[in-house]
Length: 356
Image (cartoon, rainbow, N blue to C red; front, side, top):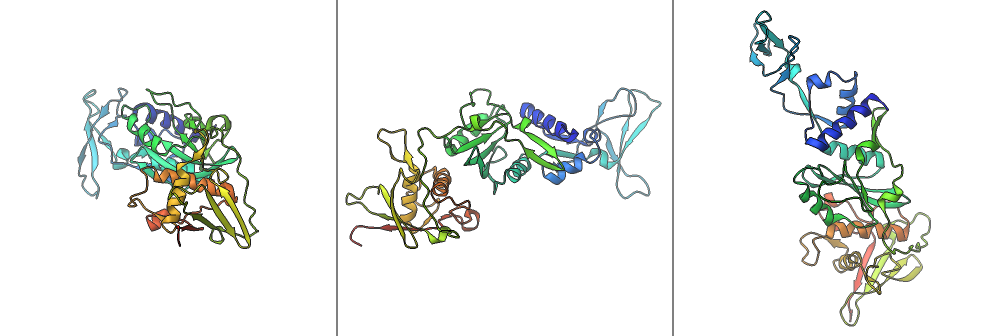
């Protein structure tokens, strides 16, 4: 284990236990040369406000003191002085401005570093300073959405857990955390609560160990394998049409017509991997309802749509995962949400109403 890895894990443990991610200059000075700059370069350490106090090395007592700024003749920047009260013979102890520099461990930087190593992204903050969506990556032979949760041992962890519940889909979501919540058992499939021990620093980069992830991430209950649609080489999302026909009872269509070039195939919601298997018999999942809603809206859906559920963001991730599974395409079936401020499908989604 590298020295940088040991220091990073020690910082993560401290943040998890106390919430204190501040690193004073005197602490960073004890690190091997280059570690601080490495952390800053990786984005996991960022400049914070200057410290007001420092450990004084003027005598063997090593008191924690608050030096006062003083202007020194001939110098542009002030120096900081402290009058030693333990030994009058020492007098004033002088500190340079750099002695009061301070950094903090950046949770957002850790999120970006993990996403980069996983080949996921883009990273999106779901709850300020506490929960991030790292995007999708392949874990245990399946593409899964990865969330990073911060501070689950803190007193206000309930708000983080409530936000996680809005986005968590069993078998498709992985939650990374430094530890389990103090008041809940978060060891059900999908939770990976030993993040600190999985992170290391190798060749100047943050790396995430995926060892033994399979048993932890879980699989969707009773989820049958989806038969892939046979796409010709070079076919992308824009070459796919998914068409729904409105039922006579004005209900929810239970199958879709897929057209790719000269190929035409009908598939049910179950054959598209969007069945709610908790019901007997299985019915359409919310992801199927949102895919139909997208088609009704011409392939676009925003938060302002009156028919969009409060779990629309999660459902779009589930729809994306299901479509990727059917068509075996790695790229997202949606355009960049941040640019358009709405979900816009790349395949052609069509809803044919009765009588048209």
